[in-house]
Amino acid sequence: MKDKIRNFFILLFLFSGGVMFFLAYREHQPFAEEKSRQDAVRTAVVCETEDPLNRTIDFDMLKKINPDIVGWVYIPQIGVDSPVLKGNTDSQYLTRSFDGEYSPLGSVFTYSHTDKKLSDPHVCLFGHNMPSGQMFGQLPRFRDEDFCQENRKYWLYTPDCSKEIEIETVFEAEKDDEVFQDDWGKEKEDSQTVTLATCSGYDSTSLRIAVNGVVKKEKFISIY
Image (cartoon, rainbow, N blue to C red; front, side, top):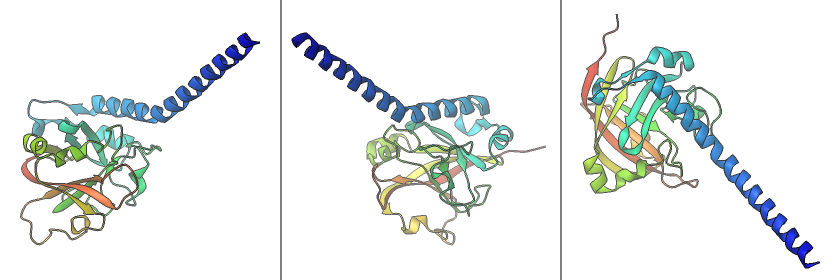
């Protein structure tokens, strides 16, 4: 009788462990799959160079994957090397990957009203703050002053040009703050400002972490 009870609890323990493993795998699977897809498209379209400003991106191939891809952002300090999407609405790519398929990670995206050449005086790029660190999950690291001082540059690419951007300010703001408004800086800025933004924390919140950078160098691409 004791052996039967012991065996029952052993089986119950193994079953419970199996269920927990399955649930953990199911929860992690979309993140692993998305990483694989991101890695695959990066390998296919990015040509590396010593100077990131001279990197080339195959936008012809990207446009075949999804015509909503309007740029590419490279922030190596936090593991971001991704397409930039512009949808028909501001929420379209909150839950869609770069290929337009459903993904809980969403994409790095900009406002639907942004110029498709990303040439507006002020451009906002958004990404989810993922616990896995994917998308803009590591953007909060720039709140550390030492980290930010050592990693001030990132790059934005479009079919027309490559841009080297230098971070100037990092702060927390409400989602309706001036920095996220359509007409922010259009009259007072001589150079283009690019804001990286994500939620402040993993739960639903109106607070955003904003990383403001200014374009310091541009390399225009001749297309013949």
